[in-house]
Length: 188
Image 1: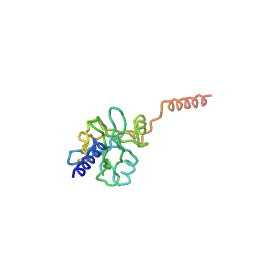
Image 2 (image 1 turned 135 degrees about the vertical axis):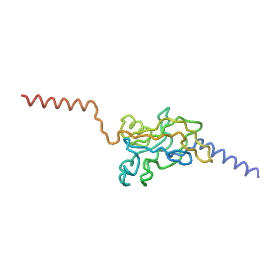
Image 3 (image 1 turned 90 degrees about the vertical axis):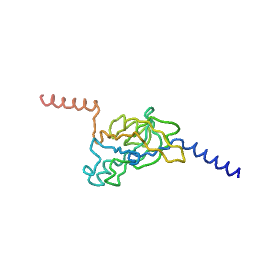
Image 4 (image 1 turned 60 degrees about the vertical axis):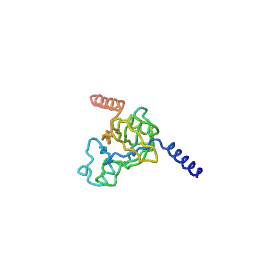
């Protein structure tokens, strides 16, 4: 009996040590009052704006969605993606669980196109295209084997610059010089 009790204690300690702060990565949890859909270029995530699943997939497909440490900018855990399987779930993500580690963390929910890692997030944020993130909030995960906690405090956010190509100043200067050269040549 002592061996069985000792083995059970060892298993519970190991489980608790491996998962210190599990959260449910989800931007729609009705029971916890979380309803924070992402929009793209401030277009409401409704079936009136996205009439077909193909339109939803074209708009929201290919984005990584993950929890970012608001203090360091590092991705926490593996990212997920937006749901593209229903007209009633536009702007919502495929739920998954993420281990925040021990204690409370200052985090953001972010969406970006690019590689599914911290470098991909940083590059998309620096470029300003195909990128969006929520305001920062505090999250504390549940200790296993309990139910993961929800991201209470999460707010809706907008993905900006999707499809907008902003040329660099050097490109604009080169275009202006080319136009000026054409004007001068035409006058001669």
